[in-house]
Each structure stands twice: as structure tokens, then as C-alpha cells.
Length: 243
Length: 250
Image (tube, rainbow over all chains, first blue to last red; front, top):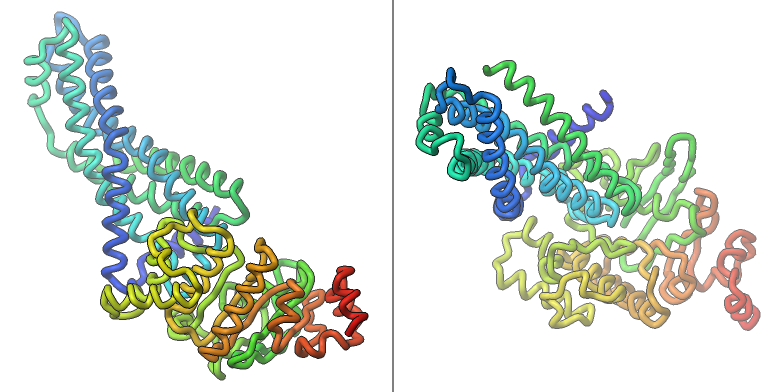
């Protein structure tokens, strides 16, 4: 375990060496941003609307009684969406979408000697392959989480429209009730950290692939599994520290 | 000139290379031959720095490459071109993008200059007009030629070729061999070729090193190889009936 951690940290250090030519790296960062951001928008939109709607329906089912104001559905849905559902669930989904793609792409480059070709040319392969992905991850995952929050809360509103239990006006009032801005900070920190974990852990497993097609698949699986575990661990640590 | 001095390479308990010494001169096709598992590719990877030798040194024009760190090696690596066994073209890039990739990173050439250079390299390997194709759209022989075009795009001083004929038909193999030989003569590159193809050995082997069991077993030219009494080399070179028959006629 310590051997792997050491290799991971050394790879990160190599990844952030001075680039050979900034313009080439910048183009690569833009390409990764489009791939990670625009490429993941569809799945994030779909899961966010459903998660927001389900959150509102379940909160209404568990908490609605004559003693509790109906606006509570809005405020609890808002807090759970911003604090947990949008950053964590979205990141777990993004691990499957972005992480597996990164690990298999870099792994394939390794087993087909494309990484060797980069090194022979004098290119810092970890820098060229990994740093643009990490930079794109820590910028695009937070943006996707913002989209996810907005759509999650919209999903809750749509669920209220479809249901007879809560009036949409109560839901909107609940969203505005006793808002504490610290939850937005926690959400932002989580999304940046999760973006880093997804891209760096999956890049690590891809970069150290050896063998053939079977091992590329195994690297992608390992990358996704380890990223998910680290995301959940980081979720706990950030929540404990910031809330 | 590349000089290999007392190279040893061990993977765990397995000693793959033992005390290899060799000098590869410019303008010559230097071939490293040997049966599968004899350490040919490991030696090539030690020379280009993809593997670190356990012991020994590799000198590029008297500069010790083995002692250098990554940054120190970059100026030498800019002078290296390499054709890999499976070509190792970047899948996500077109043929032209593959060729100009090192130019993008290491030169200040304008877009049109890079385009001209790509066209020149493609013309040199008889692939004019294939600029916009992706590697997945190319045949094995075409991939090798694009690999060569990429390797010569930076006008290398040292050219390394790993199994240039693997997976190719005999006619295409000969074309690739001739192309490598022409480029070596034209640019006076120090060319090191790893192969076990006997057509290449007999056709372009100016200087041949035969590895057996991780050791340098024999050294000479393609003219000398047919008349050697080295038992291991003879069993390698004249393994096929065709080669045995050819030897009898020599």
C-alpha cells in the first residue's frame, strides 16, 4: 500500500513538471475540458433531475405531518442535494464515465508503446498525458456539480408539481428558508477534491498498466473502484471538518 | 556514434543482459539479432533509456546518457527517432498530426512550415496525400511508413528500429528495409535495428551483433555471417531449409 502511495505521489510530481511548450498543453487541457465537461453533461442532467425528484418525494413521505410545516420538504431537499446528492452521487457517476475512460485510454497507450514513443521524443509523458486531465477534472467537475444542484432542485420542484402532497409554492419557500451558505462552500470543496481524485487515481492505474487488453480492462476497473472508495472517504473527512 | 559499455540488465532474479559491449557507427545499418528472449529488445530499450541498465553505460557521441536525469536527456532525445514494433502511432491523431507532434513541442516552426515538413516526410516514405487519415485507417505496412515519417520529422541523428518487418509480407518487408537503409545513408544516422528477419540481415546488415542467452555471441557483417563457424549463430541463421539450401550454394 505504501509502495503504491509513493508511486502515486511521485507520478503526481512528474505530472506537474514545467511543460515543454505551454500552447500544446493548453490545447490538450481545452480538449479534455470538452471531453469531460460537455461529454458528461447528458448523464449528469438525467441523474440530477431524478435524484432531486426522488429526494423531494421521500422527504415528503417521511416528514409530512400536521405538526411539521410543509416548507420543510424544500429546505431538507435543498440541503441534502447541495451537501450530498449533487457532489457525491454525481462524482460517483462521473467516475464511471470519466475515470474509466481515462484509465483505459492511458492504459491502452501504455500497452501499445505510445507512452514509450512520447518518452523517446523527450516528452514528459506524465505531464503531457495526466496534468491536462487533472486540470480539466478540477475545473469541470465543480461546474457539472453546479449544473447538478440546479437540476436537482428543479427535479424536486417538478415532483411537487406532479404530486398532490406539497404545493410547489411551499417547496420554493422551503428552498429559501434558513439558508446557510456554508453548505455551498462544502459542496464546492467536495467537487474540486472529487474531480482531483477521479482524474488522478484513474490516470495512475492507467499509467502503470502492463500486459495487454485484459490488463487495460483491469486497470479501468481498479481505477473506478479505488476512486469511488477515495471519494467516499474524502466525503466523510470534508463533511467532518467543514460542518 | 553510440557506444555500449559493459551493460548488464536484471529483472528480479533473471539476468537478461550480461556484459554487452558494442559500438554503433553513423551511416551504417547496425543490426541486433538473436532468437526470441535473447535480450535484443531489452538492449535496445537500455540504449534509448526506456530501461535503466543494472550496470554499465551508454554513450552518445562520448556523452554518458545513462548518468543523466530526465531533463539532461532531453537534448539527446530530440535527436532520436524510433520506429516501434507496432508503430506506436497516436490513435487520436491523424497521420499529419502524428508527424508534426514533435515539431509542435520542440520547434518554433510556423503552421505552414510544419505542414511542408509533414508533406516532405510523407513523400519520403511514399505516402503522399495520406495526411488526414487516422492510424486505424492504415494497413500494417503504411503504419510502419508513417512511423518512419514521424521518426525522421526532427531530422534525427540516431534512428532506432524495433522489429521493422514483424507482421509484414516479404515484399513490404523489403521495401521497409530499403527505406531504412536509404535514410541511414542519406542522413548519415546511427541506425540500430533489432530484428530476427534473415532477409534484413542479409540485405542491409552492415554491422551485426548476435545475442545469445543475454550475451554478445558474435559480431560482424552480412558478408561474414554466411561463413562463420559459430555454432549458435549458424543454428539461428540457417534454421530454415531455404537458408540451409542458400548456404550450400554460397
